[in-house]
Length: 540
Ligand code: ACM
Image (cartoon, rainbow, N blue to C red; front, side, top):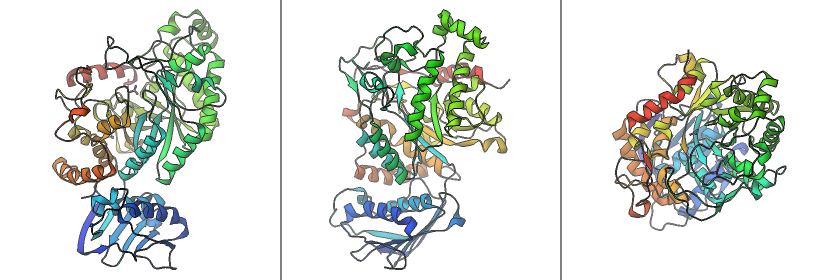
């Protein structure tokens, strides 16, 4: 019934019906959760569901803390006269409330009164706690800007699935999406591009239509606070030293050639990268100062992936800097760069996060690795004592095509079916139990080169994100047919919310993109390519 599946679920006798007299009570420290639950239950039921501090009103839905349960864990019991939700902490209580919603008819997720529904909750006793502390999603708002409203909606969808980390990819070659007061040209220039490539592959044309957008610092504060109310941490990502074409459009002096350049309009890996001047490192440190002030997250992601080194090799000034600093190889220019950024983040009290390429050099103690090119990054990082978040392309990249059928829109890479997403295992079998403690969890990555609106994000994210959420939350055996049964129920909830997920039967006609080629790959080719890519971080 519930998704993600709870630890234990025992049906009792009878049911409880929400009525005009139902109230929600909680101790003072849980009043925000009580208010959230009231806000979630009111629109569809039309019931007042008064809230009160515990012991004063004696309501029907009782929220409480029981620290012995542990972080994020909860116990939920429904009797014919009362609902009791006890959490190990406020997050646990919140997850109990999410489960309570799923025990109600799916119409509870509608936002206006639904007449004729009996708001009845079956008697159950439920115990639940998550498998991982990092249950994440990366949302690429750089390739296609996602308006604030859609980000807030996405946060609600994450909360509904008990996901707790939103990694926002705020900057890339094709756009910069966050206001930085010290560098106004980042929003005047870098936040929009002249057009967007349509489809995958070098020969694909542009659409001739400008695209852009950015979040003001007030928007960011709102997103962070909205997420925090739902026990979601927002982890910002500022890319460097590659994927910076949009920066160079505004500030060409931070590039190797220094030449004027437009914000990127083509997808792929771009040769133009940051130079290794102290002033350029200072630019990124200045940006991170503002970012650190906006995002309370302990983790700040600084990219580090896919940085070509050809410009550094060809550039006499970079070669001179390398000699001055005793750097022999171009790969160590990136190591030098990331080390300085890492030191700065440490001074700010933050932990540096980077894509698994950062393992090619030495990285500061306490850094966290996002293992994306398969799980080699997770293996190497954990063996070296670094924490890691697993997000391997072949299980967790939700921009990949959802089947090998001909109707999948702009099909890229391998077929990453719902069933395959459900098989995602964040902890590599190669790790010892002690090494495995470095795997904080996992996340799905949603790259948006080919997702130009929230509708398309819905299509790619769901229902595969439901599978990933269960992988990251649920402890114990996995059984796909059993999951698929629960998903059938769960899709009714997504229908009520208004999520345009991919139906199990395939894309609806309006979800296809006839005539626009993607770049599909076979599984064998994908695995061979990945193995080649990670040769530089494999253990000796
Ligand atoms: C990545 O997919 N370039 C991290």
